[in-house]
Length: 140
Image (cartoon, rainbow, N blue to C red):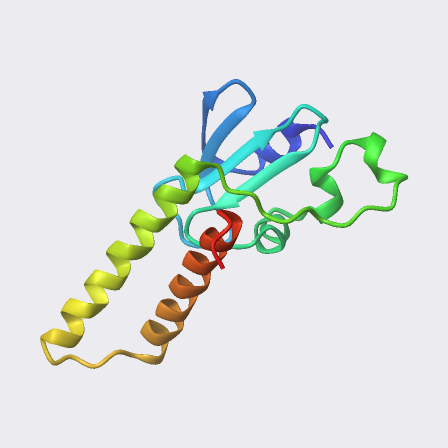
């Protein structure tokens, strides 16, 4: 797959650096771009949604398979998807976003308002995402 195939299926695409773009994530109601797309030196396409959508959800939303993220030279090989790797800036942005979310839920609880099942699930997801960043940074 060429990167253009993916980019042409996305909205509000903006190139931010050489071989790096942001766009609205097609897997959720995204009004402000939260999807990061990057082509690495070996031709693989890395995608990351800062709202928490996983790669399969994103690809499914645009009608592509996971193999679309790999160049033709990888397709004949046996491979397994790589573990998500966060660069420091991405990790800090994720922590900033999730900590803001946790603060807002804390304010809701302080006001005496209860949390819905969705709120509890989202807090659990925030915890999982924060733990993943910590593990990626070498903290256990």
